[in-house]
Image (cartoon, rainbow, N blue to C red; front, side):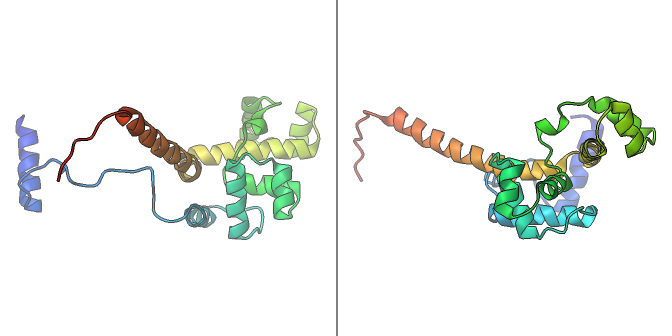
Length: 196
């Protein structure tokens, strides 16, 4: 241990009245499970996003929660629109508000070229003319580019929070099954001579 490390250890021990600087073995470790229902946790993430961004729709939080759940269940925008009694356009705008970009949203156009033109201040009419698309298509592409920029600006933390709720929960249920199956396989056919 060098002098600096030793000094830091001594300061830590003085300040905390601890006799050691390592984590205790009995402290709880992280888990894939988190507190609260998926719907409650989703609503919390949505509330945090609403504090940060101006959403382009006026959908209620419970509707947005259902949209997020449906997105992770791989429902199409048309299916979500039907289930939530909203227009397809409203669903797409709300999805973008929540940083829920589908792979298909980025397909069919040169993402980098559109981003470069938008960064240069190109308006929608000019963008549509330059890429020979309708104004609605140009607006949709602009929204995808803007959403991706928002995601990057926050290190994609909101999308990762949704992933943790819906993908990690699914993974945790699978790992529970694997653990049970693995234990069953390992103990199959073993005799038990325990006496109490």
